[in-house]
Length: 440
Image (cartoon, rainbow, N blue to C red; front, side, top):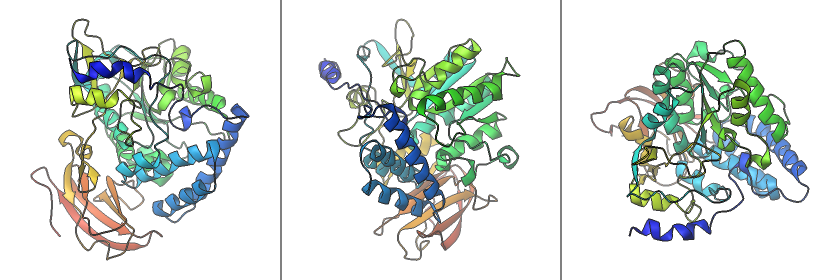
């Protein structure tokens, strides 16, 4: 018998009633929901301070200083902000270790283990698109500090567009950026999570495919968690369905906002459930926030077992051989569980960044940072200005390591800057699929 099946009962003993991330925080401390609201308000104030920093490296410093001086619920939220900033800076592996308290967890008892005798592993995008063929609302979630959780949506965008989906909504988008569609690419002011390169690529790709891209976050400065879900629902309904009942919507959301049942989010009804009820068509809810890489010792118990049994190379789902149904770890909350590949480090960066061959690894030219550390290296498409979200970023903090940039084929302008945002060097780079570029 495979070891995965032997230890499944042990996994059940690990299941906790806590949840993940700022939207799925640990149990509410003394003081109840009011403490959560106060922590959210403090976090929003801190974000505004970080916004005024001279660059993303300096913003990370703002969060780290605040973390040292905080405790309780706010400290947990700031840890997520630090890890999100790591991800924005291309430090994807560091993001996992800087927010280890975001260990993936479940509610109640999970589904039976999907052993290899009864299930087969398939690429998630094609399988989910098949389920979405006759639906009106698809909601895929992410773990905000895990850049890999944007890979699936990048693959789904062209498939859902081909099925007739008309709108793409991303949680982080700022409705005040009214020039996004005309530009064709996101900038710093386009939204908070959009600043991470793969998130920015999602938005860029959606625009290229002809989606109407929708911002739907609450515009209340200090919205309570309950008000935030209601505002998100109202904003999506009014922007998409109120005047176009035949519209079809793909939403990329965070954590439990994508759930079809109340239970996480401090028992507040989630946006996906509310919106499905409003339009009379339940959301197709996809979870990829649980079965994913995390800091050592902080992964969901079943994740390494499933990776060992099925060795996924891309975001993957499990299909039962007899019924052909897709497996969900928690079917009451979401319809399908996605397993993200573990990946391995290549010259300091996780190799999943090649997105199954969609991107090529290019060695960063030596001398670009002019010997200054820390150094932020950004790669933007030729012709896009420095305010555009780059296609990839890497932050070199120490040592002679020459890390890799992962880029689609094309012409790029590399830019290196210091912690204060000052220019250190620039270089042109051409990327093809032929071989990694190692030119200095």
